[in-house]
Amino acid sequence: MDLRYTCGKRMWLLVVAIFLASMMMLTAFPAFSSQGETQWGPRMKELAPDFVLKDIDGKEVRLADYRGKVVLLAFSTTWCPHCKSMPPYLNQLFGTYGDRGLEMFNIDIQEPLSKVRAFATKYDIKYGVLLDEKAEAARAYNVMGVPSLILVDKDGTIICKQCRSVDTLLEKLLPKTQ
Image (cartoon, rainbow, N blue to C red; front, top):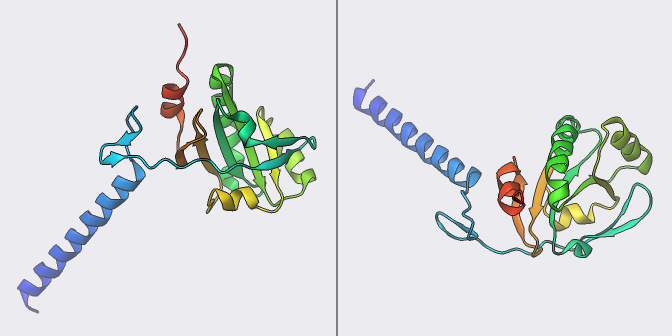
């Protein structure tokens, strides 16, 4: 076997691996600044699509009614293992930021009220629980998997989609008052 071919092939694979890792890092950690820009340029402004969904008590909730508040949308299902681990984290966020003006909604996708109500009770969800019976809100937000967190600022602009953690962003949007 030709040694030049083997070394060249390994070098090529290393270059491709480094490139792919770099691209993943750029998309996974966009590093938003407080001026609404990333370190690579202006952030695209995307208005949060409005929706009207019923909560588990049958009351209609319209997202547009929460303009002027920071809103965290948590798309989930009752059968998703990762969704079952989210309520303690989200309850803690709501406990910390709810008094500062954070509104939160768990949006359950295409499941019956009885299952969603039992889930909300079992996991002691402290924030609003909505039913997306026809997955219309999930489609409007291009939800590709659950759980999926979407953070909307006071102007109704999406500032984070598929958020892994929103703690830092919430601290900037809803700082403690002295």
